[in-house]
Image (tube, rainbow, N blue to C red; front, side):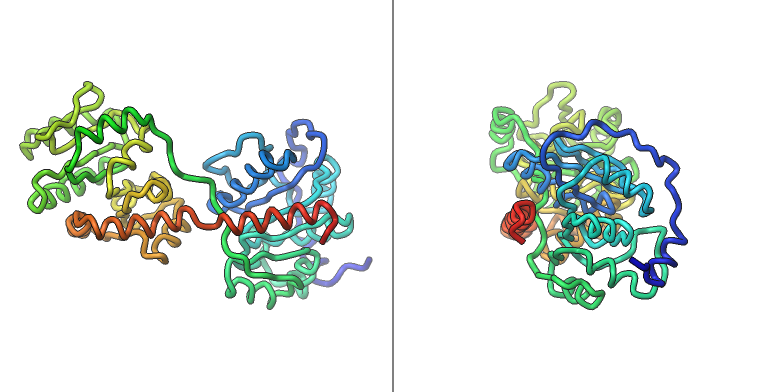
Length: 397
């Protein structure tokens, strides 16, 4: 088949990757679904989809991403995606022999999609937001995007705006289904430990400062100082980003603020007189989120970017405060912000004011409930995507 001008121009930009020969484990027997995410930030929905395919359907799952994902799915195979170059794609497909490709978000790899169509291998785009050429291969190529999208069996858009973008770009079969469910961010904890600490903190207002870098310690201390004027029984659980700073922080707050500080590393417990409780590691956030109705996420105010995934406190019913530096969690904060499920603060003054405002249990509860809704949505959409995948693999679509 003669190539279009757009495809010819696009192919002129192709470059073999530095590692054309990939280190590949043995291909599992049986059906295999290939899931591709262009960025680690958008792999969350695919991760839940992968888990269900493995557990419920018993099919092998190959996951590719141009970045290293934050979390992995047990049982999935992780590989670097092939460059959008005909020789590498042919080698990749010959080896893995996928039954179906699911692309997240909307990255378009024209050479790959045309090769899949030539081999009569189905493909679909899920969690579709907007179509775009993969990074490093952008440019104007007449008819390239339209021709590539014509090879895609179905586009499952997150909303009507996304659907219009794909229809305008040339996708022939587009439907609005919403956003897929993400892997649960609810961290575990030891229930006896939670119950024991809950009894010690009974009836006390509690807030958590999670993974606080040294650059934000003063802001957290100032916010707690201001909030104590409104709620003198308020308890701060402060988890420093560097656990080694806990003894120094304890000494500083006891000397300069006159507070009673309990250190978990010294097996001290927060009694009724304790103003600050200092854990000695960051391995128990499932416990702290459950105990604290309000969480400030460290790194987001004066650090290098938010350190913890905001969906962690959201999944466990803790209202969220965060600064202007989302780090790698921009999309998650965007969803929370759109649902009015988290409160942004621009400075340490804002942090103190917002914390004082959320000491009102009903206000914190409204924020936490909205955040929980964001963290738990998408289950029906994932069911729909699974149904489409199953029907496609059975030859019913």
